[in-house]
Length: 110
Image (cartoon, rainbow, N blue to C red; front, side):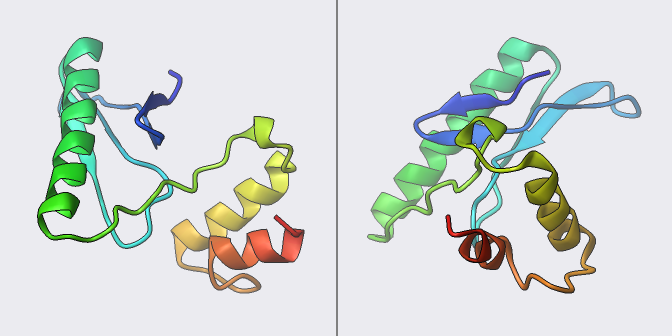
């Protein structure tokens, strides 16, 4: 399944066989975790969009700027293998060369 997009944010789409539901999380947020779920694709999209709207409203109420998603797709011209490698290092906790995805982008001149 393809990622979902809403108001400049990108969300993953995954399936849990154990729970028999769809779920995902907003990609590329620093310092925030936004997750969502649904039984149908329509429910998943509704929960995703609602979660983004709630996050933006919460930021407004607290008078802080929302974190923008820095999720970059393959179409951005980055070697996918290099990006995948850096993300895997970060996700697995085995970060060796790159301390963060931002370090990877800096080294790549992005």
